[in-house]
Amino acid sequence: MTTDEERESLAQELLRLSLPELVDVLRRVLPVHAEQDGTVPTTLALAKIFRLPGQDGATTEPLIEAVAWPDRHHYDGGFGPEPANHEQGTCPGCGLEVAATAKRAFCPLCGTLCWLT
Image 1: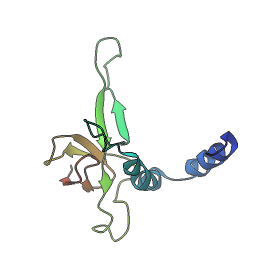
Image 2: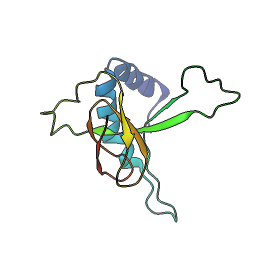
Image 3: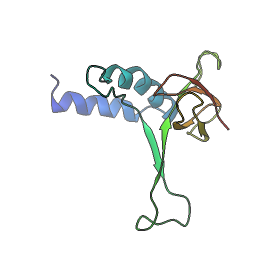
């Protein structure tokens, strides 16, 4: 078990990372905490939640996209060309709406390679 101070120190280190670097760190951590032993297996993932311009919270449900993990092998170890999660699409394997910093990224739910636009 860690202390509050240790977790705060880790949080401060994570704040130094760019968005693509943070996504890469979380790609290594979140799936490890998946729950496979219950009746409904779960996966922890990062999500992008937003509303389109002109929509308010009282009348419109937010849009939710899971953050897909960039295909770092395709980008020679990089994170893709975008500094933010501007690439979007639907996973062909499971239908999950995803967003990423790269046009080629892996679905965080099923692991299928997604081609995003």
